[in-house]
Amino acid sequence: MTESAVRQLVSQVGPLLRLVREGDSADEPLTEIALYAPGAPAQFGPGCVVLAIGVTTEVELRGLAAEMLSAGARVLAVKAPVPVSDERLTVLEVNEDASWMHVATTIREQLLEYARARVRSGDGGSELFTLANAIHEALGAPVTIEDRFSALVAWSAGQEQTDAERIETILGRAVGRQTLAEQRERGEFARLHATPDPVYFEATEPDQLPRVAIAVRAGADVLGYVWAVVPEPLDEVRTARLREFASLVALRLAGSRIETSYARRQRGELAAAVLGGSADRVEASRLQLGSGPVCVLAAAPRGTAGELHRFADTLEYFLAAVHPRSAAVAGTGAVYALVAWPREHATPLSATVSLARDFLGRTPLAGDFVVTVGGPAGSLRQIAEVRAQTDAALRALRHPASSGPSVQTVSDLALSVLLLQLADVTESLGLPDRTGALDRLRAHDGPDGLLTETLTAYLDAASSTEAAAAALHIHPNTMRYRLRRIREVSGLDFGDADALLLAQLQLRVLLWNSSK
Image (cartoon, rainbow, N blue to C red; front, side):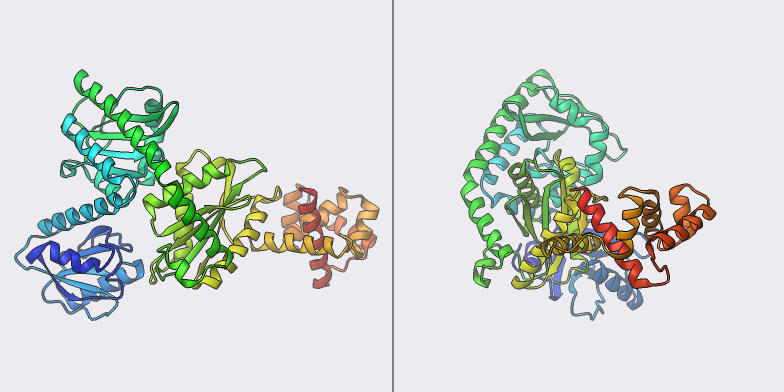
């Protein structure tokens, strides 16, 4: 359904839908459905088919269309009359005699089948689906196979017998972040890793079904998990069968890594060429990133040591599962990813940041790595420019003097980048790291003297005497006395904005240099 997605959907569901108009994004993949009713909360996103339940007036339709466009949703299904005129929307007319529940169920089944075909088109996918169906037959329960980061690899037939959480996992190609956090909090993965046997988990929500799962291993390494929706714990026979199948799944998961290594290496080399600005348009098109904006993600260990290639493999596997329109590669000292979005996506940069945070929330390597995100870039030339920006931001984020979240944008780190560049220029030109008033103050006070500390606090507080006094835990009158002493000793004019700026920049650069 990646090509003419809407037309394929209409042809597959028969008389339920009629294509009224193809909008700008008719070729984009369809990933989920959203039920909309006036006055009820709803969440839309790119790739979403919105069912306009109970929407009958022009005012309601205009409001819904505006809400969809702002969220990046472009496919609207509505019963006649169909007066929506915005050409950016693809409009489907729903048979007036069809129940909305039947329409929703039918479209969802088609999206599940599309997702299945998309996964099976990859290396090894067909065999994993065959295994999932074999486990389904042996256990009499619908099955999913997930990798070690809870990204979906394959699933069996019978998913109509599962709950909403499982359907969302299949459509999203990964376990939801909130669900994953709750699983960790309940210690589910710790229980799975502690035993070679299946583990039974009771339902934790009224609309959820119980599950049984087993960790899939290659030696001591956990490669993934097999999950099955079951009404009760497995008996001895089915427990033994699931253990046997887990070994087969492990062989398939381990084998798929070897089979795809050459293709991955080629893709990585092409991604590196795009990041370096040496790929032409034809070469870049082989990455299948589309024609929309591209953000650049750069990651590196906080210190000098880090499992860079393991991190790159993990990131590549995660993106292949949850955001296929991407390419990752390990460079010298850093891992990069090109993350592409549809042309009409409203917030590609923030969406890439969310993707990076989601990834770090799933991997045990998160505590050792930091990530910077730049862009979006609208051309090949701009991708190379954004890569240079993310490199500079990554260097700043890895600096010992840096603080803040593990994932930050180039804009978030702009000041840190400028300070490092200033330190570089000062060093390359052989300029003194302090001059004028600051030089006189440090000559009198010493590098860590009381007056230097006071001036630093005052400038950091944007020249607020009260705020600086509070930061130093002294009385404002004491602060005013020290400022007078600073003026007497150094000759610094607190009314001269340029003099204050020079002193503050020199103090900041000294701080960054002392933290190396």
